[in-house]
Image (cartoon, rainbow, N blue to C red; front, side, top):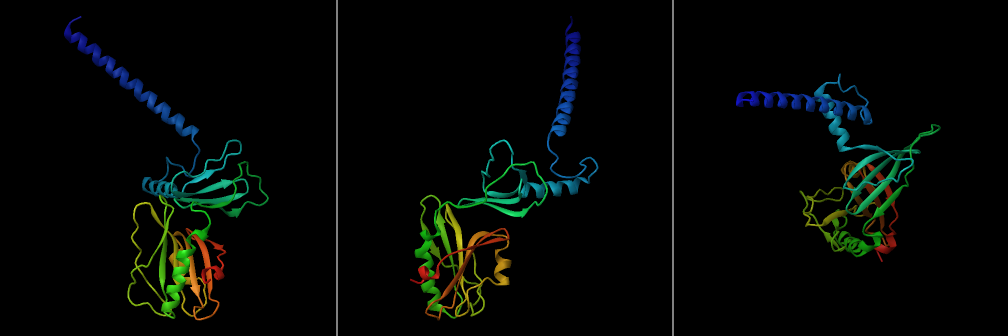
Length: 257
C-alpha cells in the first residue's frame, strides 16, 4: 500500500467514525429526551425558542420536584428554594445557612396523588430564638430612648462562631413618628442578617402594608416594637419567606424584663 492509499484509507476510516459517533449521539439524545420527565408542559419542538428559554430559566430559578413514594426524600442541600409536590399538597422548601423550611402552601383535596409524603418543618440552625434575647433587649432600650420617633436595627448571626451581634443601619433622610428608611448593613464573612427590627414609637406593634411590601421577597425574621410609652410595651414577630409569613411567639415580657 502506497502512502497515498494509506491516507485515503485513514480518511475513509475517519469519516466512518464521525458518522458512527453522530448516529450514536442522535440516538442517545433521543433516548434521554424520551426517558426524562417532561417538566414543562410545552411542545419544545413547536415552542418559540426565546419563550422556551425564558420559561426554562424561571423553572431553574424556582424548580418543582416530586416527593418520592418509595425512596427516601432528599431535602434541599444548597441555599435556595423550590416547590415540592407531595401526596397531600404543594410545599415550599427554602434553605439558608440559618434556616430550613418545609411549609405546605396548598392542599390537594379528594384526589389521590401517587407521590410521597413530606413533613412540615421550621428548623433554625442557631436553635431557639432566645439566643438573640440580649440583642432584642438592647433594641428595646434604644427604641424607647428615641420614641416616639421610629428606630431600626439588624440582628446578625455568625454561622462559624454561632455568635450574635446587633447593628444599627444608617438612616436615609430623617426618621419620623410614622416612617423610617435605612440602608442595609454590611455583613462580614459567615454573617447572616436574621432578624430585621423596627419600632412604632408610641403606636401599636403591627405589620403595616409597607412592611408587607418590604418583606415580600425576603427570607428573614421581622419584628416590630410598639407602645413604648406604656408600662407594658408590645411586640410582634413573624418569619418571612418569599412572601409567606408565619407568626412567631416572642413574649414581650422577656424583651422588656
